[in-house]
Image 1 (cartoon, rainbow, N blue to C red):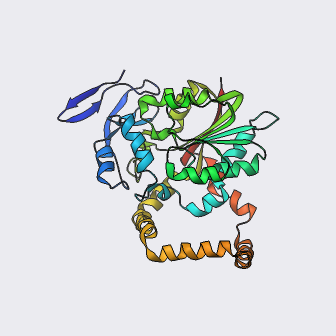
Image 2 (cartoon, rainbow, N blue to C red):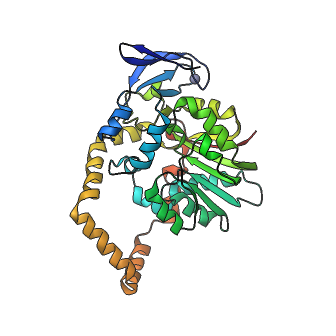
Length: 349
Ligand SMILES: [Zn+2]
């Protein structure tokens, strides 16, 4: 269905839209790799161009990346000192501590579960498992499972008594998952695959669900026809979704129960990122390297291990802790048009 043509040493995508078979626009966009600056990452992302469907707005990067190169990237570079992962969250520590995004996803999905709730829950690409820790509070007693390729996260996950599949998620590796799940979270994962693989990935995902199980799928909203000039970065994403494109893709295999824009307005985030991304990047690089940050971490560890001091810290924390309303009034619980991402809940047809 797809082919690679060499034109003046540039690979050109010449087929119809993999989502809707619509015609691809003649306008081709340069691929923006803002963060991944190692030689290896540059070789991976620099040759890419982005092609957009005139009908559904779906965008794809091309040439497609080799599976082997992608696995290497997620095992070794994605969460490394290149620092992009933290860049994507405006308040990483607050978000991970309270699991705000995950709590919003779990509580949305819970509306569509059968009466008994979720007995077995899976988070694919869980990182350090923040989403599953939130799930443990919301679904007490549920068995928790994770798929994670990055070995630097495994120790934390095992300490949290999370059942762990130590692998990337591909149609092949998914066959090794023996359980079926009442609830699966696939949050900000789908955009990391080559467009040619999306149908196969979603089939693998569908096969993990129990008959009445539900899956939350969340992706960034990237409307290239409307906002290509405002967007800040593309790497490491390979597929780019509008609400229409995500709906059409999911409806091939799933019943869509819910699918809407979510989070802050796209344009607000883009403008904020444009203004601050360089500063943020410098902060991350500074934090991972500086001696002062090392001393801060050491002091924090001593405080945690000394009961009297820990009590004092806990009292202080209670005084400055955000309220329930502070958490739920935030963007992760807000839905509408032209938002920063798209949240969908699906079940088997
Ligand atoms: Zn299309």
